[in-house]
Length: 408
Ligand code: NAP
Image (cartoon, rainbow, N blue to C red; front, top):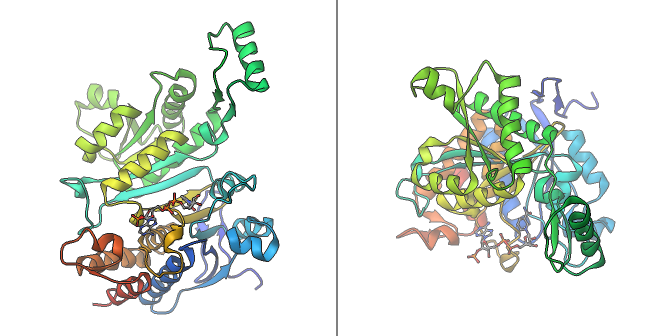
């Protein structure tokens, strides 16, 4: 059959994944080819060992980034976007943002053009990874960051430009605002529909993965009709669509004397600055975090640092139609082609991808064996410089070491 190797999606969002599946990949720029080679070895190794050869991935390369430009004259060819949509699931390395080519960021373009509205970042401690926290093992959170609006859809006008003057003229003349004449202006939209679909996907993730709470992170004490509305809409969608499995924090205290009932997820909200304190002081109180774009940008990287840095942090951008799993760091161009950097972020994104495809045994095998590789202290430079007595190995050797640890 012509399409028998392609994932399809059911109306309820679940996937039909064939045993032999074709998945597109973008290897990425800079260090992308190095980490992709290592990640591919690990993903293929895990699938082979977990399923004894009965499942297999056929990889299909998509040209994008510098390779895309060299082959097609386009950094992000439409054919690559179409292929991701068609295959439902894809994985990518980091892409350089071309400077002075009128493109803000290829990564942001991919998210927006494919309507991948949720940037999902699990943050969980891997034993033996150096961390600045006293108890990093208490951290087990998943951030759902809105990917299509807030500052990603923000509009700005430069101070003293004609446009800024016109906007200021309108706001002061017709809306009664008080704005200095020489101000730069920024506007950010946040809508009910897009906020609700993000929070709904966060709650669904909490339900499917056994997280006890979903925290709505916002700055609604200052920006009531954007950030504050995000929180209000979050509570609304929890009540409207998940009323049988969610309770609010107020209900937890009033109706259940503070004891979380079996089978219920607590929906709570926190002002962004307070949440930054609380994830340091009481990380065990937080599970899934749903948040608008800019807050999500900050908290994702801060939490990644709490468990050992961006070199190991996996991520995915997920929409209704398709999902792209990606390394969360950039192209680290000074190390390009040196076979040096840590492929952990892309490898763990691969594990997330396998989980998403319900190939959970292979995903678990990757997580267990990356932990064993780190515990054995033969690691890439970034970890070696922080782990006492560690031996530095190359990116490719680290990939091979992980595969080696898959078999007892
Ligand atoms: P970067 O590529 O993330 O690199 C910054 C530093 O982070 C590196 O110098 C290195 O630190 C460390 N690092 C990054 N990846 C690592 C890895 N795999 N293993 C170990 N350490 C790693 O950030 P950047 O230099 O700001 O950005 C470079 C390019 O990447 C830009 O064009 C940017 O637009 C793009 N970018 C792409 C993405 C994406 O595709 N999702 C994300 C961010 C940036 P040390 O110097 O301490 O060794």
